[in-house]
Image (tube, rainbow, N blue to C red):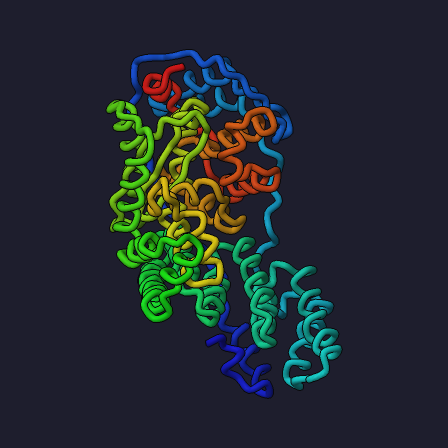
Length: 501
């Protein structure tokens, strides 16, 4: 239960003061390893040109751009990283200066009188426990919201506002506040602990598992990481128990599936797959998709993608998954992830890219979606909510098997803004740790953004992986604030040797 709900309001002030004194800042360090891929001797010129105006000076993804990256790769392989960087900077304009959040602060005594007044006003009102709505708003919520807005670095302000929303049964607002705080300060375990506490209070076990796992894999060397990994597994088991109870007790999938589609057996097929766990369910979904799709069998291309994907997956943390990487013969530039690390690329996506760093950027992002159970959640959450009929009416068909249609659902519907950010955070950490240029994913998104409105192909990926100006800016800020290297290995020659134009 949320800690505020366990308190009498007349004791709240004492506990909050103790809580503030107990908070300490966190210095999180993550490991960075260098794994330089081998280079093929073949060079194939790139004739595709894309112009992006997302950053201050336009990037022209032309043959000259990739020729420069190829030149930089040669110095990179020799260990001359400084020369490689100088060459890349000739065609990679600097990002605009990133907006970084204010430094986190947990000590109220270090804030000014105005901030202290906001805090004191809210605390005194909470202690008095007013019942009139006007008093609750003016004496509690307005001061706390002003505190968070004007002093966003004061972590206890976010936590208290979220817990106070919870105290007054405003679940959505409580989660919104703590989610925003976790986006601003992803390395704060006090924020994470409060977020997990709220999610568990609301029965959101899978979301709690995802939150704990994201933190653990984003900060693998932090002293609390093993505990968060264990907690993630525990919450996932609780989620599966809840899912099984829903399915077996209420028969929600079978009954709704029969009403929505007249096909109860197909609905139950999906539910049974979910109960087998992420890895096994992913294998079943992947096998069905491959049976219904035109798959690429080029061994060189499959081995190339698999080699890169497996190396990235090892840096993610979900060793229990059996990762596999597949190519569907489809001209639309798309990629998607199934549960358990089953990743699919369309040939159109591979034709859009021009370097191994770009491929690795998309791979890392998609693997992160699987690692963080986003695909599994999308399917499973429909079994626990009133939207089950919507899922089943989409995935159960008479021409294509129900399991295969799950893949289409994951491909066609976009993840939430929060889920995309989670995959970006983990994916970019792994991309950088592997020694690739950290802007690989950014450049692919930039190309797609340029094509949007001009190509129906581009729209398909943008529908599931939006490249909005906000997201592009977020990627810029993430790369800068985390200190990731935009001038690492690009792998132009290696990529173009396997995927020639």
